[in-house]
Length: 113
Length: 115
Image (cartoon, rainbow over all chains, first blue to last red; front, top):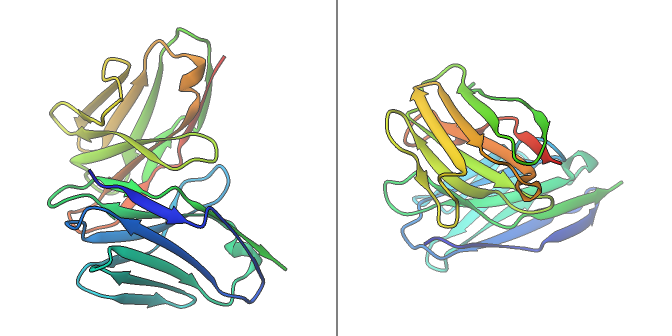
């Protein structure tokens, strides 16, 4: 089955700096890769996603890159702000024609003012 | 946008009792809903896939007789934790998709504490 690894587990940056979180997946059939932001005690919120037919997607300060050959994808946050502080989860859609999202282990991002 | 509503948001129960958690899709029909469990400072672990009108599909290691799932309509799935024990204390989150190529939307989650 699909296995998603994520690192780092914690990341501290100064406000204004960039943050990068990386994930690898095992199932070469996976074709959908979302990123979720979860604040303490709240539901995960989708912040960006990418499909296997593109290599990069950007939405304002957030971007995701995908390398299907190497089976890894990354989240890039530029000009970080204190409100970006949260736990970020990557995920991969497992297998063909299934809807089961498998999540990475999470990255706790802290942005210091 | 698509909204998934989950109820209750938190519940405290005694060991040995059962707890029912409801997950509703408010403005769309969901033939499939997913139940996740999240322990403190851990990731979301898929428990089961709830299928409208048929039996749920459970992930390996999840006891189907303990975590009863009913998906009786296109907008409602329920998860019942039977004979709850303290180790069942966790954050339970349901989710659904509006279509095959749409993102997964999460409910607010239910924090279960078993005393």
